[in-house]
Length: 340
Image (tube, rainbow, N blue to C red; front, side):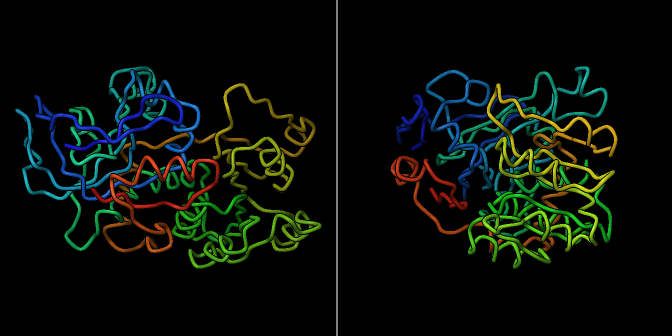
């Protein structure tokens, strides 16, 4: 079969590899669609030892398709079923799993190989994080379950409630997903971004209002929209020092700040300790997803409650993937469906 393999930073190739054969508890999925992701572009630029492991490594992690073979002991799934598989599963036995924090699992099973004709899904993921898709849901829509699960996780951890005023800093793909997760909970959402077209997309996704990040006084506009006191909750979805600081500055007294966008390892962000203490700001990092959130994401997609048409810009073939990453890796990109 054909598969895109990662050989090192900015070096991926389409190669021939054996079609996988499932072992005990495993399944083989013929890929119907895989989706590009900002994490994949980051890994392409600089490598990612934890995510990719030994090189050369399978590449891509958002996938949906049809089961072609199952291993010994697999009972819930049969060949011919349309499924979506997550990119991770917890171990069930470590300190964090025992406390319900599966996303922090010390032995989190990470999985790649979406950019290929077939994918061997490990037993731990088959056990926890593979779900059947209805025939009405396109594979490329089903593959959105992983990033949508991350957005649902963030909204849940921040305890966003109906009628709350919530700000999202950033207007990329994850912001579109966050808007939908927050609106699903009844929140009113304002998005801050620099690209007018992307801001327009967030309004289509359900945002009540948008503000250009290039405006002279963003803080005043936000405060006015948020009842003159500031937002109840702010989501930072960019992953830069300056936007982390902006998120903390925009929140009202007693407000909550979700540090959703990940910064590079070693990044240090100055914090206004006076505000955090005397105004009781709550700062919360949110990472990844869990089987519970992945399951909720699949349900939203299967019932048509997610606006998937806003999230995928176009499609490319498997053979196009190396050239596409070489051409696009230096910019922020909408999702593209890879159709083997």
